[in-house]
Length: 373
Image (cartoon, rainbow, N blue to C red; front, side):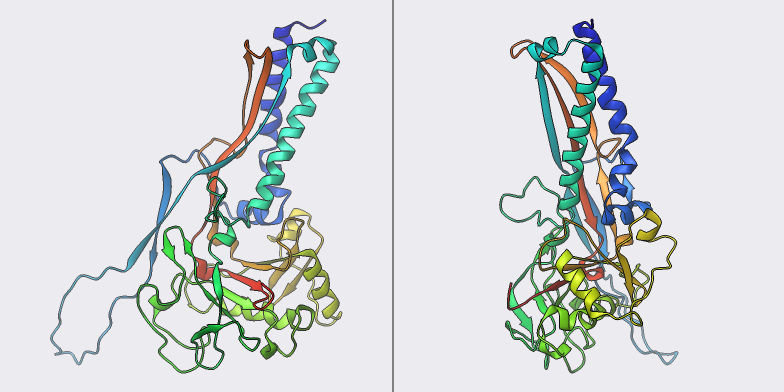
C-alpha cells in the first residue's frame, strides 16, 4: 500500500519526465510547428520583458556621380523597431486526498498520474496548434499568441486593379488593402513614406521600398480577374499569385515555402488539379520528412492542411521567417504537485510562456474572400 509521500513522488516524476520526453514530439505533431522547428527557430530560455528586432524600411540614397560631383554627407535612419511581449497558456488539475485514498493501490496511483500527464500535455499542445493563426491583438486576446492573423487585418477595402488606389470591396480586385498593426508597426501601404513609382496597381506596380516594407499580401481568391468567381475555379491562380507576389521585394530573405488551407479548400484545390498538373513532393526537408501525407506542390511550394486552419482561409508562410520564443527551458513546463492543506488536494500545472514571431509581414500572404468576409 502506497503512502502519501510515495503518491506525490510518483505524480511528480511521471509528469515531469513525460513532458520532457514529449518536448520535440509536441512540435512535430503539427505542420507549421514542424517547419519552424526544422529551421532551428525554436528558442528556449529567453529572458527580458519581451523581445525586439529591427526592420530595414528604406535603402541608402543613391545619386549620380561623374567623378567630380560634390558629395553631401548626412545621416539616414533606415530602421524601424518591432517588439512583442511574452504570453502564455496553462492547464491545471488536482486530486483531493480522498481521491488518493480511494486509489491507494500502487498501480492505480501510477495510472492516475500517467493519465493526468497525458491530459495536460494533450490539452496544451492542441491549444498551441490553433494559436498559430490567432489575432493576439483582438479584444480579449491579450494573453494569447500574436499569431498570423495579428498582421493580416484589413478594413474591407480592396486595391483597385487599374490604378492601385483603395476602394470599397470590388469583385474585380485581386488584393485587399492591408491595414493592421503588428509588433508595434503599421502594415498599411505608405504608412511611413513612399509611393508607387510606376503605373498600374500594387503589388504589380513598382514602388519605393518604404511603401510596402511591412505590408503582407491579401489575395482575394474570388476575384473575377482570375477567370472565375469561386475558390474552386480560382484556387491555382490565386495561390500562385500569393506565392510570387510575396517575393516582390527581391531580398535575400527566405521565400514562401508552405501554404496551409482549410480542409474544404484543400479538397477543392485537389479536385481542380488533374494528374498532369499535380506535382509529387520530392523535398527532403519539408512536411514529407515528418511523415505528413496530405501534401502536394505548386511552383515548388508545399500545399497542405490541418484541423486548426481557420475556415475559408489560406495562409502562405515563409517558415524560415517564423520563430517560437520561449522563456522556459522547454516549450511546455511542468510544475507541482503542490499540496494544499486548506483544500486537502495535490495541484499541478503544465504551462507555456512564449510567443510567435514573424520577421516581417511582407514575407507572408493570406487567401481571403473579400466580398464574403
